[in-house]
Image (cartoon, rainbow, N blue to C red; front, side, top):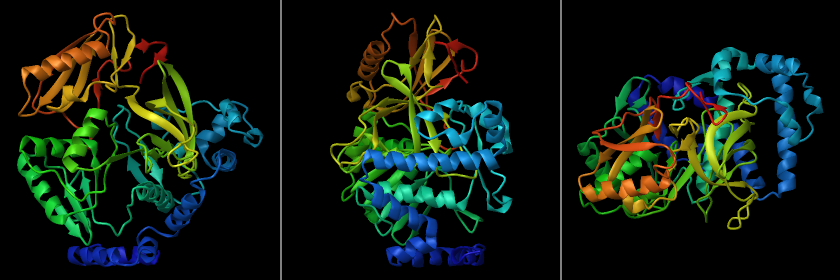
Length: 475
């Protein structure tokens, strides 16, 4: 047990001591703060990411090949699922010498991970070192994932490296929205908590009264950065506009994560927070990670994090398939993320990083609509006029019958029939109605249900698993 774990164990049962300890740590010099709070692995990977961020493509690929071979050797010797998979397919991992050679390994589906259970967990890692987590199940397939403290420290290193591109470090004043109540010592849940230069706000309550309180606390706190799910950032932004409140001032960036953010949503948040929205992409499975840079919003995928493959889906879209280097406790090799992206250039002319760019994350494979003749239509609304959605708080497509879909809309106080007409015109154009064989009916609702982790999915697709659409089995 290291020093920080001893401190946490000692203060874990006492709320005031834990709060005091957090505030003391926040005030320490950055090097000491990071070592105590995040650990040696975090420091090592932070230094590595800083040193390697401008490597040329050849050097980055050489690093990926070395990491890939190490991961495959580990999986072949210590992970039951891969040991059997490689034997069944006659795969000799020693012969996998390049990124192209990985094509001999079958894709890994979410259902396989769900059904395989502990067969995906490395046998050489002590059970006491494993940390059990669960995905949100936003694809309809929740997973149990095992990781270690070391893999968490690596993730923190990537998060901090990404945020540092816009000036963030842990000494900056920042607000963090959390989905559930804030707990300390494992015994008490709160709606807000201030520790040193951090303000934590729960989003379990989404009432107008709580939004007003959040707005007031943020203005009084005067942070440089705000971080949270797109859903809550958008809800607070719309509240600010509806109530005629002044936009925030003094912010350097807003970090939006965990959910796809569309241009019209981004603009509303930026207007209310009066700063840039800086979004990033990742997942519990730990196979792909990326975010914007100092100059451009396109996602820059970290080649140090893993290998990303793009499988064509037609119409310029690709499903991203990832092999992650971060978590040896439960490796994911050639994992189908079900996330659909528009691929960009292989380097950024603004920041000069040789990272694969992704123009946009269009959604997930289960976020589709099905036409009368059983074809798939993606529900991405990129490219639409943002003004058409200015008075929409939230929306979600719902479908339980081929050829007919419902667009559930939560209206703002300023919503009128003109907004409905604009949305219908945009939707008709986007989905090429009626030529594409689908009818979309607009329905007004009071609220849209979130997933267990607080997300709102683009589409509640009840046909999933019942059809083979465009030759692709949809889970």
